[in-house]
Amino acid sequence: MKATILDSIVKKADSGKKQLSILIDPDKVNKSSINRLCEVADEISADFFLIGGSLLTDGDLEETILLIKEKSKLPCIIFPGSSNQLSPKADAILFLSLLSGRNPEMLIGQQVIAAPYIKQANIEAIGTAYLLIESGSQTTASYMSNSNPIPANKAEIAASTALAGDYMGMQLIYLDAGSGAKNVVPEEMIKKVKSYTKKPLFIGGGINTANKLKAAYEAGADVVVIGNAFEKDENFAQEISPILKQFN
Ligand code: 1GP
Image (cartoon, rainbow, N blue to C red; front, side):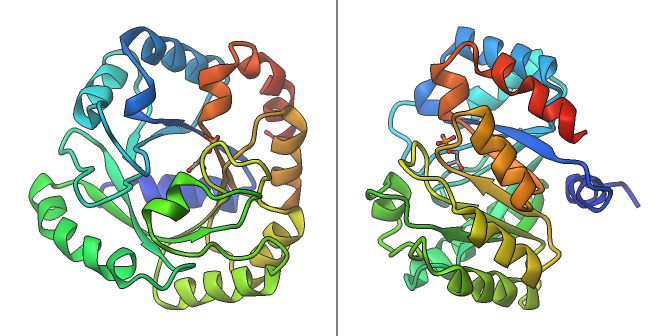
């Protein structure tokens, strides 16, 4: 059977490799910034791209994927904010269920709408337990999803929620403080979640220094997702490069 993108993420996580994903929000990029991000990905040996956003206005998801694919061989995984962020040009999609919230539309409604399209597009769907974590101020993700994030000091709620996702058969756990978050996901919470489930753990939101990246890896993140810092700071790749070397 053909190895899947999920297989590769799991294999790397099981072997202790710390992975890095660059998040590209189609609203915030153009051809030249995409080219630059592809070069950065190459320089730091990033593992894959995530493409999407909680709200898309003038950006074009499919065009963004095609531009990435002109420059990079890394897998393009859709990180959808809603069921209309889909494209057959992607390699896979994080099939998210927003388990931290109690909004049925984000738990199962959007997924039912998206499922037949994903089947037709023939892209790999990776079941993901998606948890928003409170991060100091309301994020677009929490506002747009009409859901409350898990309080930052309630590691046990995050761990129990992640474990429920694992028991429900989800393949990945993603704790997200939200794009541009003021505060990152607390280390204590990452540790607690990691002690409850062995599924690959994604951490993202507000990671914009080498120290924050290091802390997330040390606490147990298998994959760190970074968007804003790469878009805003041209020297960020250089700053984090020693950390990536240290962990791999
Ligand atoms: C948000 O986890 C991602 O969903 C990345 O956040 O843009 O703050 O790095 P940043």
